[in-house]
Length: 368
Ligand code: OSB
Ligand code: MG
Image 1 (cartoon, protein in one colour):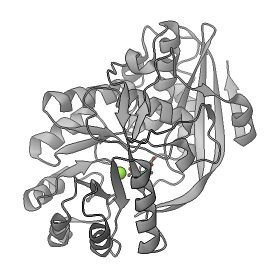
Image 2 (cartoon, protein in one colour; image 1 turned 120 degrees about the vertical axis):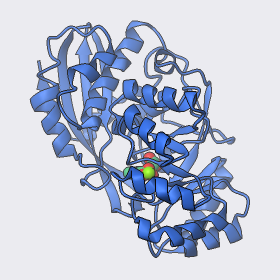
Image 3 (cartoon, helix red, strand yellow; image 1 turned 90 degrees about the vertical axis):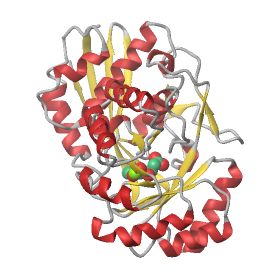
Image 4 (cartoon, helix red, strand yellow; image 1 turned 90 degrees about the horizontal axis):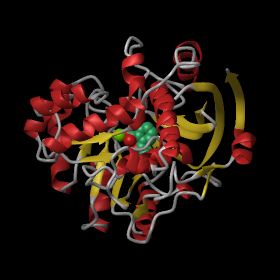
């Protein structure tokens, strides 16, 4: 396929409720969207980075820069045999996986339309329905958190993830387990601890969590391996895994037992499938992480979650948990059993709502 035109835009979308992690609180998302035109078709991709360089080094500004000055000039007017060519063609650009993923995923969206296949099927998905969990941020009080857990569990979500940090951890988990002894529960620390906290983290074992996500540094596989030898709770890595090679090394040294795959963090569907295939071959469960995506990124996450190795409920949940009005039609909904039906129609299975997208766009630039 030949890429004829690419449009970048930045949206500002207020969250219906703030989202707080050990990094801080987000109230409005800044989302960069990529729209690629090729052979009469349009494909969309979303840059999933946060507003600040806290979860990763990428921000909307760095993504805009890398796309505008490198990825887009290297793509326009070129022949692309397959979306998977994005990885080798951009290999000399170090990092910036979320910017790369937005472009690559837009090409997958185009190819799904060209081949008249649902995106999920095109990337190898086999599941008709994907199991969903929710990620609940740090709240103003434990009572508010307990209320939220009650509401999400009653809505049918299959597992509850809560955010933890020093000072909002054992006290919170104690209260959750006292009220909800049976829910599938996990905790995400977003790198808030160090190996010096091993004895403290060992106390998490008494809450029989499904896993603890990314307790230690984003670049520290070795200490995760040491910690995993000391605690019973399985470690799941998020921030540490940027490629299939990272996943291989983490598993080889025992740094984790589970991996959270995010399309943006690993750089798009090609790399995500490699991480998935590696984990599946080693019987390591994976699940789809979320980055508070708009409907476009959410639709891509649903397609990826249809791969057969995604055996654990992910963080992909209903649009209405994030947005008063999503930018796709229909919005993403979750069944009473806590599942999302994987669209069976060609392409993304959701239609970007241009009128709505235009309304929340704060800047736009087109490249021909
Ligand atoms: O660590 O998984 C994370 C959101 C932003 C940045 C990092 C993370 C998260 C979430 C939210 O946990 C997942 C979601 O609901 O999209
Ligand atoms: Mg995480």
